[in-house]
Length: 43
Image (cartoon, rainbow, N blue to C red):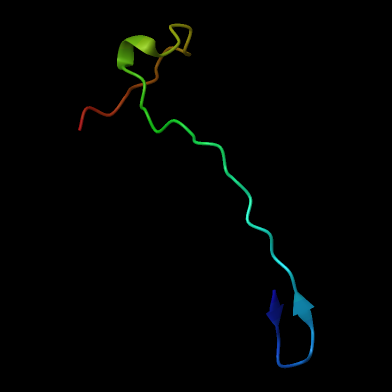
């Protein structure tokens, strides 16, 4: 709970955030039906 100088109070509740994957797919895992003419950076 935070009590501000103005007398207003705010109450915050901590929640659990689900873990997300930060794994980047390999080029072979990308969809093969991408529009033609797309180029992927090589650097």
